[in-house]
Structures are given as structure tokens and as C-alpha cells.
Amino acid sequence: MIATILAAGEGSRLRPFTEDMPKVMLPVGNKPIIEYLIESLRKCGIREIILVVGYKKERIMEYFGDGKGWNVNIKYVFQDKQIGTGHALLQAEKHVEEEEFLVLPGDNIIDGDSLSLLMKSKSPSLIVERSKIPSKYGVVDIDGDVVKRIIEKPSIPETSIVSTGMYKLEREIFDVLRELVKEGRNRLTDAINELAKGKRIKAVKGNGKWKDAVYPWDLLAINADVLCDLSSGLSGKIERNVTIKGPVQIGEDTIIHPNCYIRGPVVIGKGCEIGPNVCILPSTSIGDDVTVHPFTEIRNSIVMNDVSIGSNSFIENSVIGEGCVISSHFSTLVGEGSIEVEDGFHRVDDIGGFVGGGCMIGSMVTLEPGTIVGKGCKVSSLKILRGRLVSGSRVV
Image (tube, rainbow, N blue to C red):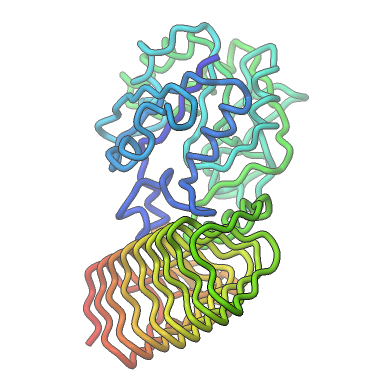
């Protein structure tokens, strides 16, 4: 069976992190979100993969290439304008030769059990799950185990059962898509609703492991979730008096200087320099080529590649984007934050801060709970930041 992965979108509600990369390439557990899906497909015996790419497609193509490094075969299809999932799938039509095939979202964490359920289904099918925020998804109207329709992002959902975007479909879907796209109806759910009028589409209940990052703070929950399956692996150089407890992975050419304390699950990438006297606590992912200076503590956070964090800093429940240079005594306060995203304000408990890629932050800077610092900002020393700082801002 062949799998078509939709990976052309940006993920605008995850800005500023998607200003540097498409949503599918955001790292959790030091791997892009889409990599977990590709690994699950391989484990289920699916080797032929079509990737529909668009927004910042070079990041995806450079990372995965032809897929041989993952023991799969990847073909790329381009969606030049991101105008809907149905339009995206239609671009893959000439590469789908089998009568039955899978259609999957590249920006979700999807486990092999759900894929197996989908593959075993005898008819066109959709994996459904319960969601705490159904208004952000397609809510599924089900009669028994038959999909009657999908209501896209209703303001008042009638049920918490939502579409995961994981389908087993037949080639006839392309005929439906072509007609709908001519009418300007570019969503895949439009085609599913049309198909459901005359054909049985089965609703298959997932096992609750499906994860989707809608907002920046969702990355932390997904990161913690994937790290639950972490196995220990220590490379690099670990110097004297370093304490390591629980599952911890440390990459090649990384140096852990004396008197550091690391309690897993924690993953630290390649070429990093940590410490001395640094404390890294559970559910933390630190990317490649990261420097963490002495007397700094990081917990339940994501630090992406090529970041430098100054001494005596405290980072908790936070995400730091690629290429940031953060000076000493930086702090993210944790508490309830009111966070502005494009679809409004959200109250989030126990949250730290979010710093977009390429920021330069001076010493003794504090982020209040829920603060979002846009890409490429420069912040002078002794500043307290709150709210949302647009990309490219200067705080002097």
C-alpha cells in the first residue's frame, strides 16, 4: 500500500517557529514531527511514500532526500499555493497507481497501532478521536460506525469526536476532488462529505495516542509524550562528577562538563557543550550544537539547534527557536498566561515563554508567563517582556 502525506502547509498558529520551517519539521524529542510518521509507516510495512510539499519545502527535501536513510522510498509532489488539503491531495493523483491508499497529515504524531487499524479496514475509512478542543478540527457526525458528514471547525461543536485527517481512500476520490476544486472548494473534508452521500465511509476509533500541535504550547505536551519512550544512549564526553538518572540520550561530540545533573527523560543532540554546574530536568529536548553555560537550569522545554544560553539562566515550560543567542541571567517565569494567537486570546496554565529563531537577548531579561518573542528580535539587557513581540522587533 502507498501512503500520501500532506505536508505543504505552514501552521500559522505556531508562529514564530513556523517562520523558519514548515509545521511538519518542528522538532519534538529532537526529531521533526513528520519523522515519527515516516517511522511508523515503515514499521507497518509501507515503503512507498508520496510527500505533498509546498511551504518551505526545501527544509523537508534536504532532510529526508529520497528516504533511503529511513528505508523508504519518497516521491515529492508540489503544491505551489497552499489553498487546501483537497487541492494538495489532487496534486498526487498521477503518482497513486493503487486502487486503495492512505492519506495522512504530516503534522501529527501518529502511532503504528492507528495505522494498522486503518490498513486493516475493508472499506474507505477515517480515524476519529475525542478532542478537548473540537472547534479547532473537523467534527464528525457518525451514525453507528458510518461517517455522515464532517463539520469543519464549528463554533459550537455538537460532539467532541473529531477527524484526525487519517484516511484510507480509493482512487475515485480524485474524480470528486477535481469537480470540487473547479468550484473553489479545496478542502479534503468537502470531498469526503460529497463521497459520504452515496458511499459508506467507516469511522474507526483511534486509541487515544494521536497528537496534534495547534499552538506553540502544544509542542511541549507532544515533546513530553514522545520522550516517554526514550531509551538511554550516552555518546560524547561525560566528565567527572556528572550525575545522570533515568533515560537520557547524549549525542556524538557533545561535552558534559563537571558537576552537571541530568534527570531524564532528556535528549541532548550532537556537538553540544553543557556546563559545568548545569541542571537539566525531565521532558527536555536540546538540539544539536547548543551551548548551555554554567549554573543554568532547564526543565520541560525544547531548545532547538544552534542556541547559546548564558550562565545563571532558568528556562521552564518554554520553547527556544533555532540560532538564538541568550545572555546570562535569562528567566522564563511560569504561571497562567494570556496568549494572543491569530484566532484570539488563550488562557494557558503553567506556561513559560516562547522565543522565535535568531533572537539576540541581553543579560537579565525576564519573560512573563505566555510571552511570545517573534523571530529575529533583539532585546537589550534588564528588560521584562510580556505579551507578544512581533518578529524583527527591537527592545532597547
